[in-house]
Image (cartoon, rainbow, N blue to C red):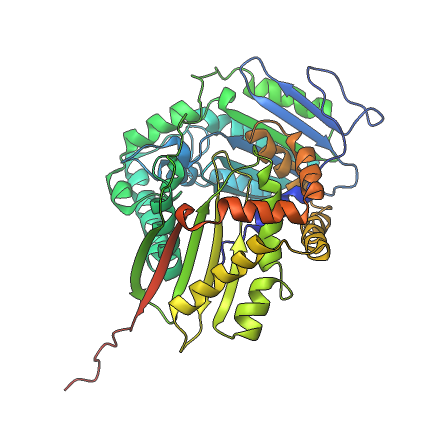
Length: 453
C-alpha cells in the first residue's frame, strides 16, 4: 500500500486554457470553450465545450465530505452516497443507473474528506437524462428505513474488508487520528465502526436535507455540447429548487504539536510496516510547492533517494515511499513509509528513512535532481490531457478549494521551486517534534486445526 496521491496530481494535468465567463452570456465556438453561471438559488454551473470529445460528462459536486460530520456521527457522507442510488418517489431503487445504462452511459460516485461527487458519461444528446435525474435526487430521496439499515450493513462490511482487515490501512487510520487533534480529518471518510452502528435513518435524512441544496453544490458539464441548450435545461430543472442554509467548512485550527507521537498496531501480517506523518500545509501556503517537489526527490521512481538507498543499496525494505498532496481544505500531512524486508528490523528501516531526509537538510539536492522532480510532476499533466472527465474534475477540485483559477498558480509555484526551497521545507516541517509515527507489528496467523482427531 502506498499513500502516494498520484490520482490528485494527475487531476492537474487537464488544466483548461480557456477563461470562464460569469453571467448569462451565450457562448459561441469562436468566443470561448468555457462558460460559468451562478443560478439565483446559488447553484454554480460550469460548461466546457470540446468538439473532439466523443462522449459528454456530467458531474455534480456537493460540499458535503466527511469534514462536515461531527464526533459520534462519522460516516454519514459516505453512507449517503450509497443511498443516493436507492431511489426517489419518481424513480425506484437502482433506476438511476439502469436509465443511464440503457442510454449507453455509465455512472458512479465518490466521497472524500472535503466533498462528494456524482458523475455520468454518456452521449451529448442524452445529457438531459443526467440533468433530470440529478435534479430529482437532489431533493426527493425516499430513504426507506429498512433499506437504510441494510445499506448501513453493507458499508460496515466494506469497512471491515478495506480497513480493519488491512493491516497497513489500520496503521494509516491510527496515525492520522493521532496526528490530528482538532481538524476533522482525524476520522476516516468511511466512518468509525461504532458510529456506523448507531447511525439512524433520521440522522442520514437530516444530513441529506441540510447539505444537498443548490447553494452547496456545483455542476460541471463537458463535451461536444450545445452549451445554450444545456444551460437552459439546467436552469429549468434545478432553478426551482430552493436554496438551503449556508454550509461553511468548520472553522477550526490545529494545536501546535510539541513532540513526537508514536502508535503501534498489532495485526496478522507478513511484514512490519512504518508510516511517519509530519504536519504540513495545504495549497494556500507557498511552501506547498516545495513540499511537492521534496516528495518526488525522495521517492519519485527507482532513481530517487529512497529506492536507491533502502531498496537497491541497503536492501532493507520491500518498498519505500514519500507522499504529499496540498489539494485539501485543511493543512495536509507529509508521509514517509516503508515495508520492512524479512530479517531486517523496523528500527533500522525507520532510521534509514530519516537519514535520507537529514541529508537534504544538511545539503540541498542538486539542480538536476530538483529539475527532474519538477519534470515528473509536469509529465503527469501530459499523461491525461485528452481526458474530458478529468478536465471537468480539475475545475471542480480547485473551485472547491476556493477558485478554479488557482490551478494556474499551482503550475507557477512548482516551476519556481529551487534546491534551497526544498532544503528549507525539509528543515521546517520534517522534524521529530512535528511527526506521528505508526508501526505495524505482525502477528502470526493462527492456523485452524481441521484435522484434529
